[in-house]
Image 1: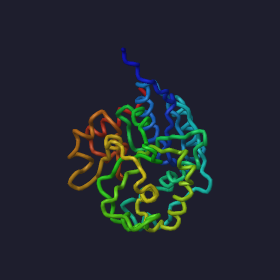
Image 2: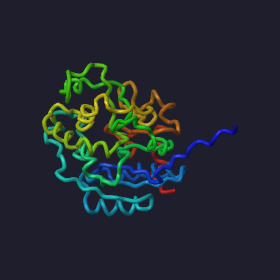
Image 3: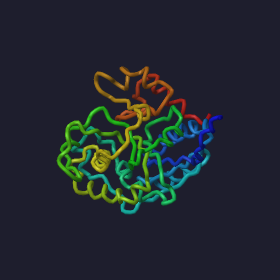
Image 4: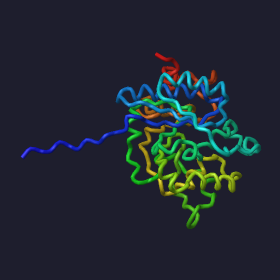
Amino acid sequence: MSELPPLSVELDPLVHVAFCVDDAYVEPMFVTARSVARSLAVSGRKPVFHLVDGGISRAGQDLAQDRLGGLGEVVFCPVTRPLQLPEWHAERHPKYSWWTSANLRRLQLADAIGAEVSRILYLDADLVVLGDLAELYDTDLNQQPLAAVRAGRSPRHWLQLPALTGPPRARISAYFNAGVLLVDLAAWREQRLSRRAVEFYEQHAAMCWSLDQDVLNVLFENRWTALDPKWNKLIQHHPDDPFGLEKMDYLATTDGILHFGGRVKPWHEEYPQTPLRAIYRTFCTTE
């Protein structure tokens, strides 16, 4: 008796991608979006770009529509009662002084994006996609509301944040980087997670050195799915590992997502002339 062919699963031809940016990151966002479109072209999927308003001017919106419109559908997502970065944040936390209120929009994804969208892939605007993004988008969330890549270690300040329920977290608690997030928006809405996230930040902003990333790690503690580390290959700027030089072979492989963390970005003149900058520049043109 011959074996039956495997059942086919009909996948959504659209891949919904979210950015939370202000005018300062509109141009870098185009580079990231271009890498998204090139990746999805391999599998025949089409991107829908959801721009969650982190402070984009009208001119910035017009530019985004013009540049992104040739890559996929563009949806502008206003935010009701947007969170604002406290004025004292840069002074208290100079390590993160270049961050803006746009970072906080990740907490409000479920409220800003239309109810017809049940799954979305959030991407920072300082990364480029090197692998098959459809593979990431179709990842099984294992009934969890979020998937992300685990950070190297749990920051000490986060361990001191209050837990939503139960006893204080253990030092072995896993902490994820929020630069790449695969989100079950339907679950977020059902559990009113955006509202809970906003409330937590408003109560504990002074303790959230990493802003919304800290809040998301509290909110989803022990309730997130770990992605393959290749989907957020973060370039760290440690003194003994500047700009990823100690991991160049791994970072430069044409797989996963390359994430340019830190204050100095590959579009800045002071970024060193490494293979990583060369990779980034391949996505700076429309060809």
